[in-house]
Length: 169
Image (cartoon, rainbow, N blue to C red; front, side, top):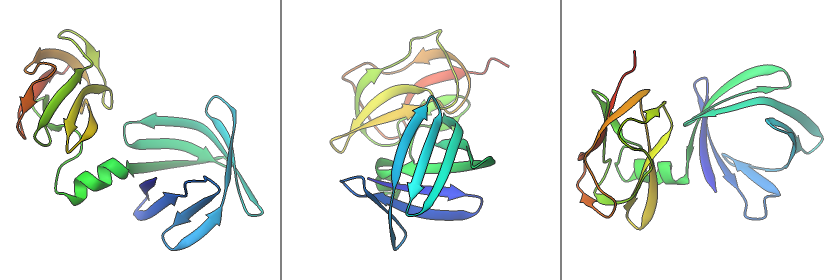
């Protein structure tokens, strides 16, 4: 599994080995062990170093946590997001006037919301199958779903407006 992590202005490519014993950060291979203590609290060991991760909060592609007591904000992109970016597709729905548009041609597999539902940024709202992959599209803004312009099983083109979200503010 590969992820790209950006903290401040520094971006690192992180690749987890299949056996989950080593992680590759850029060109450096490091042994690691991640232990869950309780909800939102972890111990990370790498070599002779130990780190405490606490207050973990995930919001879409942003992760906020404390690392040995210091707050860290990171933006993370997974394998799928990196691949879609490499192919020239924008990940997630594009946001414009509260509309969620198909980032690529595909088939609607699941609508996870109904008209009238309230959503917040990062909430999954649609599963779109494209290039034989299931892509979870997320709400870009907070609000109420006012219309759904697609059905399960429907094929949509790039930029098709799948649903509209009206701001609650």
